[in-house]
Amino acid sequence: MVSPGRRGVEVAAAPHWRTRRVPNAGIVSRGRGLRSTLSAMTSDTSTPPPVTVRRVTADDHDGWAALFAGYREFYQLPDDPAAVATTWSWVVGEQHGMTGLVAEARDGSLVGLAHVRTFARPSIGSVGLFLDDLFTDPAARRSGVGAALLRAVSDLAAQRGASVVRWITAADNVTARALYDELGAQTPWVTYDMVPQRY
Image (tube, rainbow, N blue to C red; front, side, top):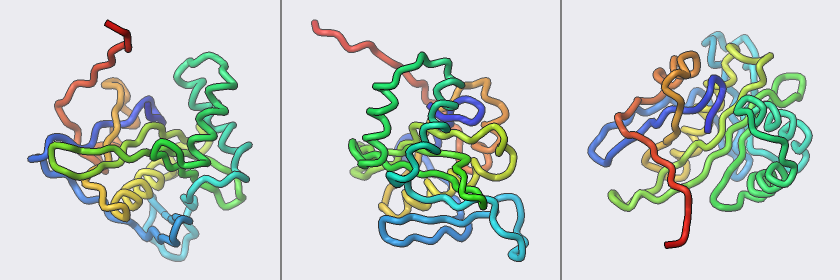
């Protein structure tokens, strides 16, 4: 599930489809410390960028928790401290192929998050990056935070040699889809969920 708006859009598709390359807009990699300084709304180099996108660290817990609480509230998920603690351990420990990114404002506060994980693409013998969660603090929306996070995800995927970045969204997520349509390509694929059970 991806927000702002509601969820993200599936950006890539079957192996024969072409996907659009997203410019890295000044993203700088420093080993594990991915940092991207992006000004998504202006090309004026004299203006400081609105946010720095970087990997989550253990020191980010409180800011991350506040953003993740907003994310869960948006989806009307019940309070579940155990689930939140589990997710934090996955993100900060980079378990299950997950990487957590945060958008840091000039004052040091965290204003957005993204959770991604690697997945295999057996049909073409490559890997992709799946964007599970994307959330921007409501007070920071429409300032380029979402675009900065998506471009950082694209850059991370390119660094890892991934062939695609993929995410899903609700059909009525019009506001967020306006951004997604700029950076990705909608596909005709339909998503299904099945409840696990023993037969």
